[in-house]
Amino acid sequence: MSEILPMRLAGRRPMRVAGLMSGTSADGVDVAIVDIGPRGPHRSANVTLVAFDTFRHPPALRQQIFDLFDPSKARIDALCHLNFVLGEVFAEAVIRLARKRGIPLESIDLIGSHGQTVYHIPEGRPATAGGSATAGRRVGRKRLRSTLQIGEPSVIAERTGITTVADFRPRDIAAGGEGAPLVPYADYALFSHPHKTRAVQNIGGIANVTYLPAGGALSDVLAFDTGPGNMVIDRIVHHVTGGRARYDAGGRRAARGAIDDRLLGELMRHPYLRRRPPKSTGREIFGTVFSDRVWQRARRRGLAPLDILATVTAFTAHSIADAYRGFLPSMPDEVILCGGGARNTTLARWLQAELLPGRVAPMDEFGLSARAKEAVSFAILAYQTIQGEPNNVPSATGARRPVILGKIIPGGRR
Image (tube, rainbow, N blue to C red):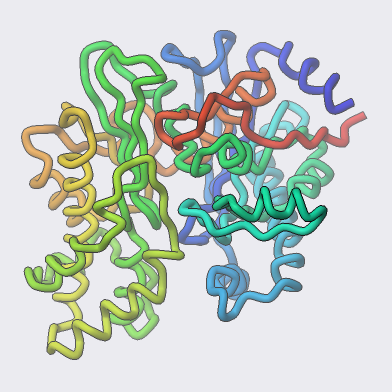
């Protein structure tokens, strides 16, 4: 049945697909319902956003997820349990959005779920292996990359009755890539331009760029994680406000502080920023431990809380711009901002100053809601999976070859 079902779905034109995304901030589930037109996503992608919403996690659930990010707190039984809890949460998010917008659930052909990343090891670790002595020695000599996303897709498919594609990253890693970034395929489909070189800059918890050269082919796309996005900023806001705020709304607090050049210089010497692409990162490098050390060191020097916040905000802007200057073949004519950081006007303003004469503008000005973009991207990726089409970008992930990402769970409809 797993072979017959995708062929049956692939014959439907157009196809209605729900995309699900929960990012490194673990605030909640983004759900986008899109219609993908008869030609499918490529340079002339025909993608129409039908509905979008974000369903916030209760604080207790968010804390449980954050505990999984921290190896000193994570428990295997909690990991097992939350995999199924988040499957229920993701399924309910699709059902709620469809009900809220009057969309019949049966009109949705497919779901693409990114899941919730709880750990990502793109640099790899030495392998250990059981089995035969010969096999063990062979595997043991390798350095293996790994990644883990939870939010059980079998639960999503069973609760909604809709065929679900999930767990996109592992196949790219198996093919020699880092399993990230994954959205460049969708960026190329949605935003490549025949005459303008563009950069699609997502600023979520981590910041990542997709470079789209004017008139380029998919093989010309370059993408990588530039470094921290909102992750360090959000943690410093937690300290500044005594836990009363989770983020710097509009960047208003940072705008009241002064950038400390000494601290900024130290941050910009982080070894990740000097690594050449392909590369990806996450909370393992720029999470709570890193941010708390920055806060403590700065406070010992007598820096005011708002000055620390201004400095880490500048760190995000400078690290993005520095990555462009160091690793992109040319500077972009246009930078398309998306992710939560796009709403931080102080960060956006400082980034614009760093990237002149290029134009920095929110994605909404290019015909797609910035809030919806990542969820839309996983709808597009799932669509390509069900078509049997490769949907990674080896020039971005470092994979040896194009591969079809994701695992397909048939829906429960009769």
